[in-house]
Length: 313
Image (tube, rainbow, N blue to C red; front, side, top):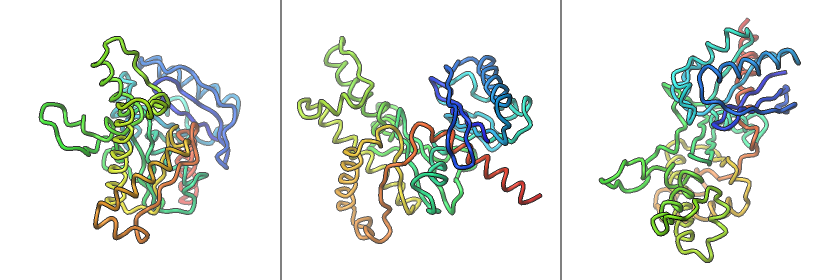
């Protein structure tokens, strides 16, 4: 049995995961943005879990950039653990192997184990949420880059640069993420029209306004186009066999249909890519795993680590 831990900005989820990727006894606690208390809470989770079950390894998914030594270079909204040598701190309390993986990378690799990428050695997984992250799998291995930063798809600048603002305003995160893009842009426009407007942070509400609200209609159209541009850029750079879309919105069948339709229209307007349709351009599909993808993927990484070490020895 393995212990999976998924660190989020709001909650820390954890549970036991078996050799087939099934999750048991899942629980959660509130994420405390205080370095000392954060580490104490993780220690409590690990120690209590080890008292309940013999643990072979611990897989942890977390936001941000994580280097090869398990150091949190960044950690999303959890500012207090920036720079924390998390793996080193946790190895002080347990001797079992630990892998700490970026949450979007973990979600990507989970698809290789028990998701829609089984038997596919080269694919990309894009996770849509507050921002846009993901993972690049090449020859069955996760590409992490020199500093653990690979997969920050949302940082790509996809629009003409406006000299008056930070160019990140033209990034995929701020144009095509569900929260940081669609919701934020809608709220910004509405607040300029009415300072008493109550911001909307559930994209479903904006989609529901599409027929009767010109602003929602135009932003949704832009959202699909910008997301399609980002996906076509990734396909051109990495030549995957498959592109998986994760995040809560990917469970919406209509969303996938509209995204696929928009991508098809965009490819028709790109001569070189259009020629390759049906030859090399990867299909788009929803990821299989949802809420447990992070912890499942992180556990898969530690499971492979243990198997590799056993083979060597």
